[in-house]
Length: 166
Image (spheres, rainbow, N blue to C red):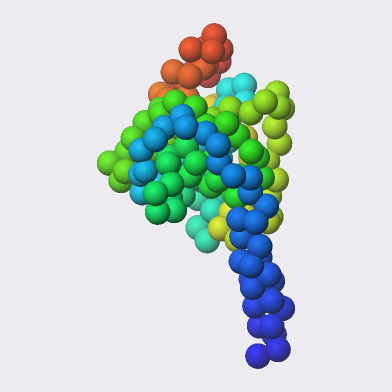
C-alpha cells in the first residue's frame, strides 16, 4: 500500500488541478460540437505532435470534447493540456470518419516550444519535421499518410513549399 501512496497522491493532485490553469475559450472559429478535435500546428516544415505515454505512438494533440464544447475550444484546450502551448484555433482542415475535427492552429510566438511531462497521457510534445513522418510509429494506422498532404497544403499556402520528397 505504501509503495502506491506517492503515485496516488500525484495522480490525485494532478486531477484536482485539471483545467484550473486553462483560460476560458473565447474563439468562435468553428461552432460545431464534434466528439473530438485537435490542432494541426506548424513551425516551419515541422508538425506539433505528442508521443503517447501508454503506447509510445505519435499523434497530433487533441482529444474528446466536453458536452456542448465547440471544435475550436476542444482543440485549443486539448492542445494546451497536452503541450503547454496556448494556440489560436483557425479553420477546419479535415474531418475524419471518427468525427475528429482537425483545425489549423497558430501561435503568436514565432518559435513556440512545447512543454512535456505534466500531462499523464503524453510522454513528450515536440516538433516533428515532415521529412521524418515515415520514421515514427503513428497512433492510428495511416495517420502519417493522411496528415502529410494536409501539412504540405498548408505549407504551400504559406509560401513554404515542402523541402522534402516523398
